[in-house]
Every structure is written in structure tokens, then in C-alpha cells.
Amino acid sequence: MRDEDYATIYTSDTTYMTKLDKLCKTSPDMYSLIADTGRGKTYRVEDKTLISFRTKKRELSEEQKIAAGERMRKYQASKHN
Image (cartoon, one colour):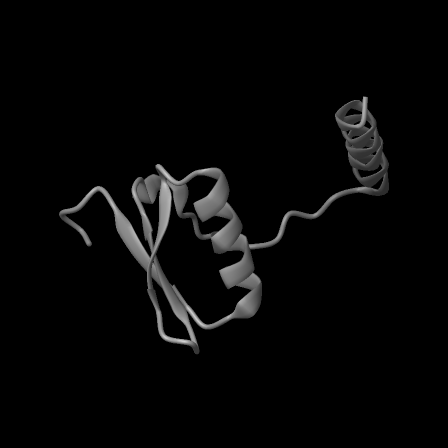
């Protein structure tokens, strides 16, 4: 979709279908389901800059992993208050 602002995504991977279904519910202005074949689904993303491709996984040091865990615990605790 070079000349369009939106993109379409097809997937038959249930993990990605679950993620995209959640995005359709939480951000219906940006994500929508346009086809469901029973084996796979096609989605429309209104802003194709939301799609990214990475060249490698991010490597975290042990200190960074501990700090990230602490941030997540604080975030989870604040959600329950």
C-alpha cells in the first residue's frame, strides 16, 4: 500500500490474532478487522507508521532486567489502587 496511509495485515498465527483483536477493541479508530476466513484474519491499520520491523532482539543486562521488573511491579501495584 505504498500510496496509502493505511496498511492491511493478514495473519494465521493465533498469537498475533489475539494481539490484533485486543488492539481492535482498545483502539478501534486505528485497528479494525476486515476479514475472517476461519483460518486467518485480515486487519486494517489506519496509520502504517505503527508497523515496525526489527533487525535484532534487544539484549538487556541483568541490572536492566531487574530495573524493568521493578518498574512493572510498581505499575501493576498502581493499577490495583
